Amino acid sequence: MRRRRVRDLCIVQNTPNSEERNSEQQTVVGSSNVPETLDEPEEFQTESGGTRRVRGRTLLRDLYDLDPVERVKVSRNTHGQPVGSEARLLAGYLGILARNANLLPINYESWHHMPDSNKNQALANIKERFALEVFDDYIKKALGKRWRDNKSTLKKQYFKKDISLEEKLRNVPPGMLRYQWEDAVRFWNSKKGEDRERVGTSSRQKQKFTHTAGSRSFASVAEAEEVKYGQKVGRLQLFEITHRKKDGSPMTSEAGEIMEKLKEKKAEYEAIASSDSSVNLKNIDNRIITEVLGSERYGRVRFQGSSVTPTQYFGSGSQQYMPSGSQAQAEFQRLRDQIAQMQANTVEQIAEVQRKYEELQQQLRAEAAEREAAAAAREAEARAMVAEQSKKYDDLQLQLQQMMHMFQQLQNPPS
Image (cartoon, rainbow, N blue to C red):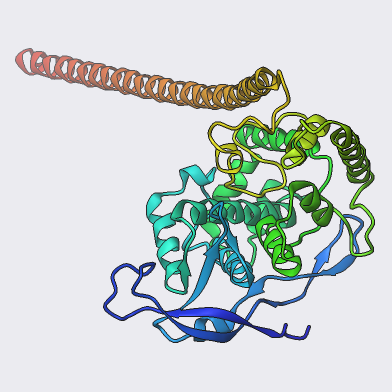
C-alpha cells in the first residue's frame, strides 16, 4: 500500500529549559510536513474461513523524526475536543500507545484498574511529541477507549476461536507478553469475564446504527465543515453528514428512517414558525432530536462525540433541548440506567463472592485432608513404635528365661 501524502501540520517549539510543556513558552515555527498516518495492510480471517484485506496498524514513523524540541500542536474547539488534522494524528498515536503492552498492560480487568503511574507515563510520552490544548483528563479517557478497543480486537482474533483453553493460552498474539495474555485469557474464560461480556453484548445490541466518519471524530468533521462553508454545523446536519455513505445513501435503513422523521419534524416546526412568531427556530434542532430519539442519556449529548456534557453544550440553566415534562422522564431514564448498571455490578460481585467462597471451601477441604493424613501417619507411627517396643520386651523376656534355665542347669548338674 502506498504511503499517504504528507500534510502540513502546525508545529510548535518548546524551549529546552521549559518545565511545563504546554505553556506560553511555546513559539510557533511554522508548519512541517508530517505524515497523517501510515497504514500497513494485513490479512484478516473471516468467520467463513476466507480472508479479506483490511487496514492494518497505524504507524507514525516520521513523527519520531521531529526535532526533540518540536511538538505537533493540537488545538481544541469550544467544548475542549481536539480538532484539525493534528487531532487525527494524535488519535493514531494514542492507538499506538494503547497497543504497547509494556506501557499499558492488557491483564487489568478495566481501565479503572490500570495504575495511575502507567497512565501518567503514557501522558508524558504523548506530551513529548504533542503540544496539547486539550485537558489531560480528555487524553486519558481517549487513551482508555483505544486500550479497550485493542483488548477487544485481540480477544476476537486470538481468543474467540473453537479451540481448547490450553490452546488459547498458547495462542499468544505477536508482540504480546505471555504472562499478560495468559492472565487476560483466564479472566475472559472465568464466570466474571463471561458475565461482563454478556452485559457488553446486550449494550451493543441496543445500538441501532453506526457512523461513517471513520477515524475522524465528530468534532473534527464539524470543524472541517464549518471551515469549508463558513457557518456553524448544527446537530441535525452533523447527523446527516456522519451517517451517510459516500454515495449519499443512509448507512442503514434505521438511520434512513430517523433522517426522514427528523426532516418531517423540522418541516412541521418551520410551518408553525411561518404563522407564529413566538416559535424560535434558533435552537429547534435540539428539541427535534429529543422528540424523535427521546431524552438525552444522562451526562451525554447526541452527535457531539465524547466528553461533551449537557451543561457544556446547552448551558447550566438552559432546558431548550428538553420538551415540556421530559425532565422527569430523563431522570427516570437515568435512574433506570443506574439500576441496570448496579444489577450488572451485583451479578459480577455475586459471581466473584461465589468464586472466592468455592476457592475457600476447596482450600479448607485440602487443609482438612492434610490434617487427617498427618494424624493418620502419626497414629500409624505410634502403633509401629508400640509394636516395636512390645517385640523388644518379648525378646528380652525370652532371653531372660533362657538365661534362668541355663543357670538352673549349672546349679544342678546331672548325676
